[in-house]
Image (cartoon, rainbow, N blue to C red; front, side, top):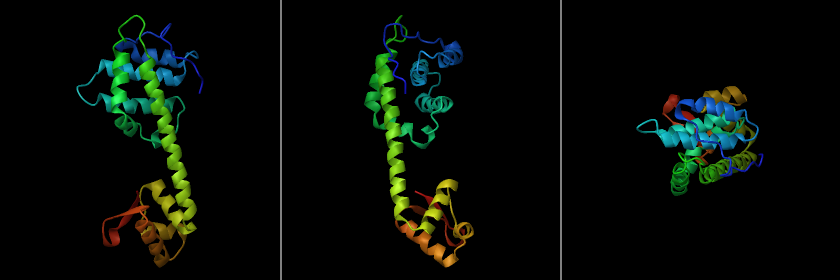
Length: 202
């Protein structure tokens, strides 16, 4: 990440609501500002405008994910922004109020919100790193057949005994034993009953 500083002096002006998309495009093409700073500034202005009666916070997180994906941060859908914000509500509202109170002034103070936004981004990346580490530990401790079954369930969202037999080439009895062990260990959760039973990842 480039280390541009979001300072009060010479900070970009608050985009007018009717020109937000154009402003975002202009800033995204400006090498003077890091994409994360542009996204953070766009989001805090969106929240200040508060275009809808309800759901603006959740929508802002969806927009944040979309803009981060467009900026090349391909990992963001795999780690929840929503949960991090929920766990940091006091800091979220404090940073929001501090920056929003200055948005209509000649020199907006972006720093409180940008500092919070970047901390959330760092926490999101750390959460994903820990998630990957846990999955590597889990997969490394499992038999190869169990790994195949679990990976299929993670990729598709579900697996049946018939699916596992088809993809592994093992007998139904052997597959059933491995699926049962994965369920007992908490890696898979059974849904349905009888022949219609399928298993989803936890």
